[in-house]
Image (cartoon, rainbow, N blue to C red; front, top):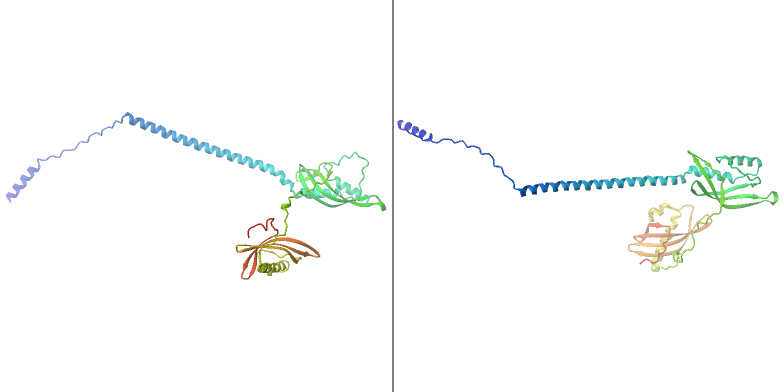
Length: 331
């Protein structure tokens, strides 16, 4: 026991010789950058700022251009709207109705003297002011309007194509003559109402028929197809069935065609010309046929697009024309 205590005492004495030394914090060392490093950093910062400024300027210029384009588009749209506005007045059916009434009144003069005075008074009501007529020897014969077609309306002047009858002479020596003329009417508008702003005038009518065509543009139905006689007969037989139902029976027509409506009050007479050719799985048939309405007959041209089902044909498309080069395509 005494030995143990003696041993512990020695151990304590030995351990007491060791002392804990506190570690002192050293101040951080400052790193001093050299001049080259500082210059690189400054130049890099300046470049970055210049880059940001350049990108901002480009973006500002782009947005400015877009705004300018948008403003120009809006201005053009406004100008186009202003330009097309007067054109809409050309198709004002109220104006056309008013002008039609004036034309009818102008060319209608009854034979009865009392009714003539009423008609002249009615005609003068169209004007803003009754026309100042200096001539004292004007004569108006009994007249009747036959037809009137509005041709143009431009710069507040309406141009008509007028046909009218006029009684020339008196009693037994009188005769009825028919005239066709151009008739021009100046007019004005106040609010939603119209008026005739001056005396109308007569002009010669222009012809609107185009002339001097090239003979190469003429459709000639003289080509012969290359189908066998048997194939030709089969398709012509189908076309005859089609036209018979085309003028008589919608239910039957629906079985052999798509989206085609029966033509009423019409009778199919005969096939006058057929040119047929194959294009892959379809067959093209160029046809001229005669029809009759009442007692009058007429011809029509057709282009059929046919598809074959089993041993029959079906009309998948129908056009009321024959192209000029119908026989020039490869078969």
